[in-house]
Image (cartoon, rainbow, N blue to C red; front, side, top):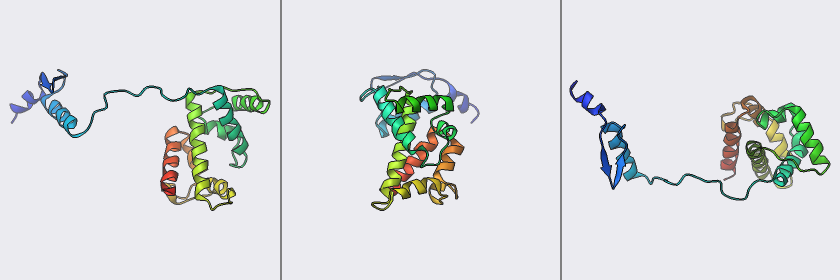
Length: 180
């Protein structure tokens, strides 16, 4: 057996379906790569930026929506900054002043994605609440829940503790799944 192991680690040149398998792969890795290609489709085209380009109008509308809900979610400016990926209070205050005076504000794609996720979380909570009781969506954001593995924490406190995009996606996906 000890003579076989070194052979398996030697790189091989393989051509499969007209495609050359890279030389630095071991025989085992090459065989697994071939098996994966046969079992699952391989997406050979990397994603490109598609859809409409985000503009300052999009950012401004998203910020306006967010600032209107900040107090109902019981968030300080610092906490809102945490949810937006570490945006400083001074920057948020400047954005709010501009939005309130009708000026446009341009934010990063990351910040816009976070605003979009927060909007989606709010929408899902609203759709889960009985018709005509949107206030329940605000309450559910702040009340401790045993759902989604939060173990008695509120969605609000979980998102603030984590402060990550992953946490926003986690809550969004779970709420969307709950509403079906």
